[in-house]
Length: 148
Image (cartoon, rainbow, N blue to C red; front, side):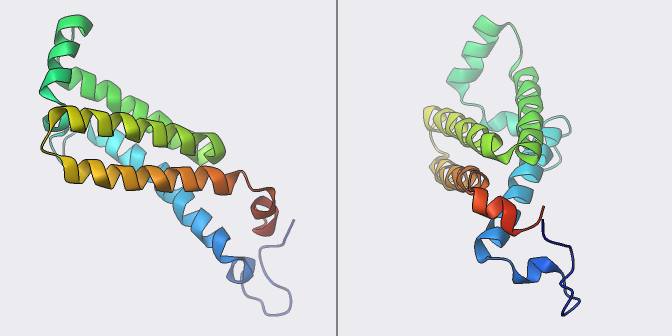
């Protein structure tokens, strides 16, 4: 395992790691923090009223067959997002795939509702980043090069 500081220069060892290690770190932090932030906001609606993104057809199905309001469903969605972010934090090789699958579910909901194609396209791009995180986390060379 590498030390935190380079003995010759006194600089942090991460300053000499591979660019892929930096990319991994950015993706790891981002895909851990952002689902947690979005999940917590499902309870407070400070960023946006998340209920408006639930397709009317899906909201009707949830009300009819799930016996709950759309808002309560979105709070459950928030819990799932928080758990997904925590999974990315502790097991990014698995969590990256979970977040990608979750994003594909969100994309399906947006396509069913119509009119949010720009957000669906953005979420598809995010899913590619989550897959990239999972693939980078699976690389044994990356795990040993950063010294974490």
